[in-house]
Every structure is written in structure tokens, then in C-alpha cells.
Length: 376
Ligand code: NDP
Image 1 (cartoon, rainbow, N blue to C red):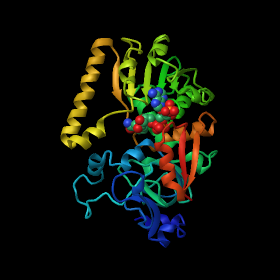
Image 2: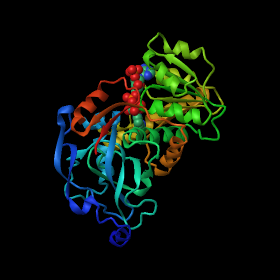
Image 3: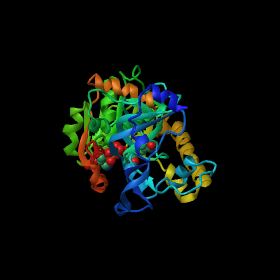
Image 4: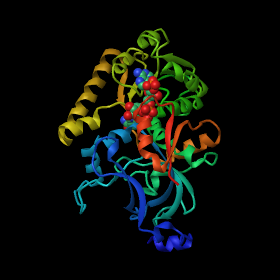
């Protein structure tokens, strides 16, 4: 069991041994910002399986998903993912802890954990079906966790994991790009000023791609500073008109969706393996409104028919991008950060007492990078 390993690792000072309750921001029902509650008697998520790592949270950050999940988005599918066989004593997801990013320190490890020991500084993106990081402690599986970049403070580090795992999954798995194949690629990133955008610009520039970004006029300085080669101000008139005057793209990463989806397809190089990857997908909305089976079927049908239609009419691939937990991918990002190739973009910081204010900031929109919560 973990005891033999942990005694070797001298974790007697582990807070898990000393306390059974922790403080966290939780919701007991879905709704607007008023449902967020601070509690000091939430069970500490101790290590339950040999591959788990328990982390003392120093900083967390917020993503648009936190706002959606606060309102019940994805509830049906996430509930199934948490408890596929409906075996939990309590089949309620409440009290639910939001917050997807963590930077912190390992305090306990399962017996089969090989990459981490207590005391290690780590970062991770917490999958939406697990209890989140707006809490004193979070427990994850080893493969979801990574050693945090040495050059960053916890506050800076917390701004990166969820957008990094999302961007890498979307650009690599769906977009077919990688470090060695991007140097002659033209990539368009819509919504370049937000969390995913500010990370993706830097990643793609480090990989040698040519990067065009759409954003508001007042974000141009930010995205150019991060390396964007060309910037299109979508508030200055017809964005399609401006983009159509440019050379066509190999990959489009769409953080905006809506009418961009239609427009973007015509901006890809035809019949050359070009890919449109959107992060704005109806998947969880469908399962929420239609139920799991119909929702999944409907989403699959939509994706399939759009993919076929685009491939047949213009020889371009239409794909959905998704966040995927991936510690090893974060290891790569960690070394890129320590090599100075990727900078954290922290727009706003809030203390742990002001989580509702942090949610409000995010909900007001117009992100310029990330909103971080200092937990410890
Ligand atoms: P953010 O809120 O951090 O950023 C969104 C950015 O888009 C803001 O900077 C906003 O600034 C800008 N924007 C809004 N409208 C437009 C427009 N028409 N053209 C260009 N820019 C625009 O979000 P994230 O970067 O974290 O996420 C991006 C999207 O991806 C979200 O919809 C999110 O839900 C989704 N997502 C999906 C995931 C998945 O697994 N499928 C995972 C992660 C994110 P301004 O309004 O001032 O222009």
C-alpha cells in the first residue's frame, strides 16, 4: 500500500494525515454566481488508488467551462463519466468543486506512482468529471500531472495547463500539426486574445508556423507581442473580407464558432489535407438537452455530415477539438516555458476569498489571457 512507499518518502507532515476537512468553493445546485459557496468542511480528497497523486493547491485558474458548468452544462455526461455504473452511495454530484487548472505541491502519492514524490512542485489540468481545483487539495491520476516549469510562480503556472492540454489536443490530434511539421504551415487562430488563443499563438510560433490571428483592435498589441505574424481586427468591418484577401490556410483553430464556421471553410487550401478544427462544439449541449443517447447520436450525426460535406465539396477536413488530460504533453510545455518559448498571460488575479468576483470577471468576457485565483 501507499504507507510503505510514503514512509520511505517521509510524508508524515502530509496535511492529509492531519486534517480530514478542507476549505473549498462549492456549488450545491446549478445557477448563476449566487450558487458559489465557500465551505470549510469539505472532505479532503485523499489518495484512494495506487496511481493517484494528492496535490496541495497553490493557485487555480478559470475557464469558460467553469461558467458553463456552474450553470449545469454537461451535467448528464459528466455524471455518467464520474460514476458509469451508478454505484456511488450518493448519486449526487454536489457539493461540486469547479476550477480546472492547478499549480501546487504534491503531498501524498499512491503506491504505484513513479514520477512524483511529496514535495514536488506540479501543475495539471483537472478533467471536468473530477472535483476541481478551487479547493485546498485536489487528487488526480499520475498521468494527468506534470512537473511545473521552474521559472514560473504558482500563480503564473496555473494560467496554462487547461488551455495547453486543449490547444495541444486540438492542434495535434485534430489539426495534424506537430513540432516538426509546422514550419511551412499557415495557421489561422480565431479569438486569439483569450486563454486558448494566447497559448496557441506562442506554441505555433515556437514550432515555426506562420500565425494569423483574429481579435479586437485593442488586443492587437498583446497578440503581436506573443508572436502573431498577421492580425485581423474583427471589429473593424467584415472579417471574412479581410481574411479572404490573404493566402489560404493549412489549419484553422476556431475559438469563436458561430458564423466563423461557415466562413472558415472557404479560407482553407483545397485538396491539400487542410483542416478546420473548432473548439466550439454542440456535444455537451446536445447530451444536456436530448439525453445521453440521442444527444450523442445527434452530435455524431452533425459532425459526420459536416465532415463529409466539406470533404466532398472542397477537400478540407472538418473536425471538433476537445480538451484531453495529458501530463506528458504538459511536460513538453513545461520545458518550452523554462526555455523561454512560452510565457504565461495572466490578465487578472484574485485571492481565494474572491472567487465569485473572479467568475464575474470571466463572465464579463473580453478575456486577454487568463484569470487566476491564488489559493494558498
Ligand atoms: P476566452 O474567454 O479566454 O477567450 C475568448 C476570446 O475570444 C476573448 O479574448 C474574446 O475577446 C475573443 N472574441 C470574442 N468574439 C470574437 C470574435 N468574433 N472574433 C475574434 N475574437 C473574439 O476563452 P478560451 O480561449 O478559454 O476558449 C475559447 C473557446 O473554446 C470557448 O468558447 C471555450 O468554451 C472553448 N473551449 C472548448 C474546449 C473543448 O474541449 N471543446 C476546451 C477549451 C475551450 P473580445 O470579445 O474582446 O474580442
